[in-house]
Amino acid sequence: MSFVKLSIFGTSFEVTTRYVDLQPVGMGAFGLVCSAKDQLTGASVAIKKIMKPFSTPVLAKRTYRELKLLKHIQHENIISLSDVFISPLEDLYFVTELLGTDLHRLLTSRPLEKQFIQYFLYQILRGLKYVHSAGVVHRDLKPSNILVNENCDLKICDFGLARIQDPQMTGYVSTRYYRAPEIMLTWQKYDVAVDIWSTGCIFAEMLEGKPLFPGKDHVNQFSIITELLGTPPDDVIETICSENTLRFVQSLPKRQRVPFSQKLRTTDPDALDLLERMLVFDPRKRINASESLAHAYVAPYHDPTDEPEAEEKFDWSFNDADLPIDTWKVMMYSEILDFHQVDQGQGLGIPEGALAGPEDGGYSNGHA
Image 1 (cartoon, rainbow, N blue to C red):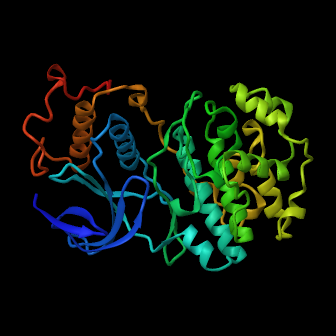
Image 2 (cartoon, one colour; image 1 turned 45 degrees about the horizontal axis):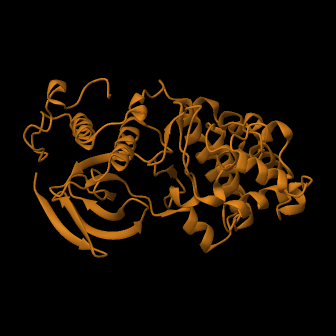
């Protein structure tokens, strides 16, 4: 496999000779994204560079997780992986289909008409139904992670923060405006309902043309939410694990819930009803993706025979593993080999001995 080296935005891009006409399209938290032409298929593609994925165990694990997800999730409303390779400098490149724009750019360019809002929301929910049925939480849904093409086909991308559903999740995730209150309140126990909250925030932004909860910081964000939803109910406050967070919530002025019809410009009763079911403090009472698909607001597009669930749950026991970088590297190469279905190391520039067996400290089937 031969590579060509380019400089884009001052960043070195090493891609296989299969790809030409590279143009920068965006910079993410963990890498640069370029558009390109695939000479093999003639299609336009997006190439995402993950810089130095083997620099730390945390980054290696995150990259491995995204690779596993992209390989296994097969759904019309989720971005699909067409190629993956590791360059001679050991950067990793994901190649996916190219969509013309994202929802963030659309929302900042012009107001959306109702039929577009309905269709975009429907497709987000359709993708989430599939992902959630696999036990996977995206965790970072926001307009810039929702890609759209000229036919209004929509695909959810950026699964770098996603993980298997787990009752003891930890971490600081999701852009603040779209972050569910349970992430801010507990930092620990949350599930697929966080994606529904984020979807509700995106839905409101499509309706209003601006973010619903534009918090300046973590504290301000939560305060803005209570201005609309009122003070969290006692059964939500009781779930708060942190003493500091509990004191903060109890120190806030008592507020009554404001009807969404008073806060939002839209007068569409179905839109307001669905939004009020999504943006609920208690995640246990929040509407789920399947229920949302059956709601009157997206009825023009709802087809229960064409809203598939995943055939099986993802087994990501590796999420609990604390492994050295070299082990993550071997596991990553193994996944790439599996994706390409080629003989070990053939044509992929894999160092000799990189795929040593478990007895040599390499990859094992148990991912542990």
